[in-house]
Image 1 (cartoon, rainbow, N blue to C red):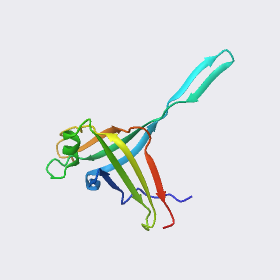
Image 2 (spheres, rainbow, N blue to C red):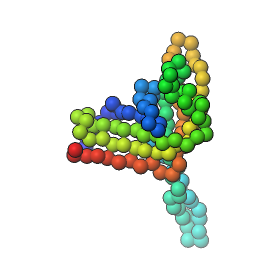
Image 3 (tube, rainbow, N blue to C red):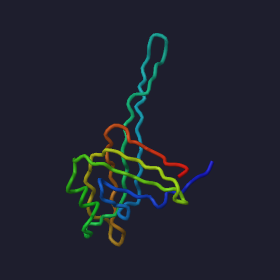
Image 4 (cartoon, helix red, strand yellow):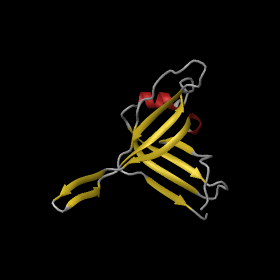
Amino acid sequence: MTAFAYTDVTFQIGATAYSCSVKRAEITNTPNILEDNSLCGPVSAVGRTKYQLELEGFQDWFVASSLAKYLFDNEGISATATVTWPSPDETDEVVAVATVTLVSPGFGGTADELATFAVTLPIDGKPTITATLGS
């Protein structure tokens, strides 16, 4: 098994790249475990899993292509988010694509600290994750 650092990752919404505005782009899930009891004992099943895109980034309000402003201005809109993670030698990559609902970030922060935001973008259905290996 080889472990890889999460480096040189690109992040975009639609056709616009926001990689330099983001410090975390992670697809997480919330499993839905259904449990009940029958006359024979406990019963469980896996229900529909919910997926979300966790974003942490910088409040770049002063930049023309600001991700914070884009999220703020387009709250509630559906968009395609793409995360591309290349291998260290850049011969392979894994690409995750999801339809997300945009959520507005916060504004402001603590004195003398970088202004950041964290949002959770709900994913519609299940994301696609495709690996291109052995190129």
